[in-house]
Length: 94
Image (cartoon, rainbow, N blue to C red):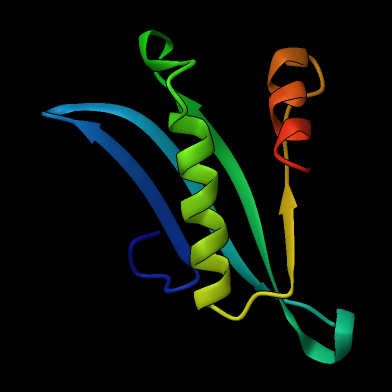
């Protein structure tokens, strides 16, 4: 994954502790006459750090990265069994 320039693993740390991750993939697309899309997945925040706006901050960073990469479409995957997570994504506009 490190050798693929279309992959970006966001890692959020607090000191020496990893408290969040987010995997971003840049994908060529036929939509909009050959635009670029970004897939967001593997979004995780360590339990004791939830409800501290870290997830929202990570999405702000991901969207900023998408703009820097000239992305036209952002997609997001999640497990439909994670209702609380689905609600969080909906609050962000997904």
